[in-house]
Length: 150
Image (cartoon, rainbow, N blue to C red; front, side, top):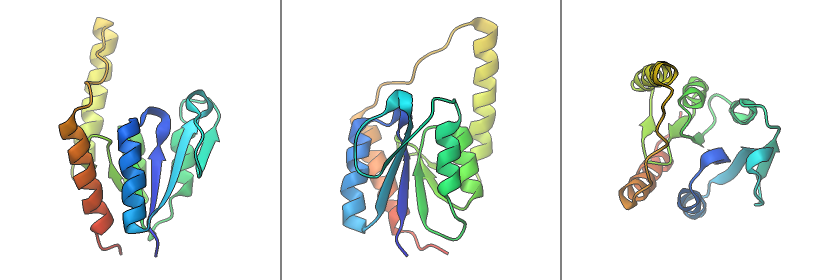
């Protein structure tokens, strides 16, 4: 059964997408990228959805089928939780593999950060991507693509 890598392309670093493309060829995986119309870019297999804040997430989740090999690439903890619930493997562009054992911690962290932003009115943007992030992403994606699927 062919693995499908579904990429949340709304905030996907270009070098991480290049890694997905390279490894998909190596492992014989299909790639589907999904983004809102606000982040549209042209590539084979790309799906554009409307600008609703959750449209990309819902499109990705609707494509997942339990028992089939899917890897979802996203930095969205909510989407990661939904994808895990559908049996997908989930990885962030920084190489963090989300699991049933760690997703609750990330969701709680997101909630705490949201409360802090509302209280202080301040927020930090994401940290700059590093070579270590790129290497970790590649190694973690290889790990997921090598897994035996149920």
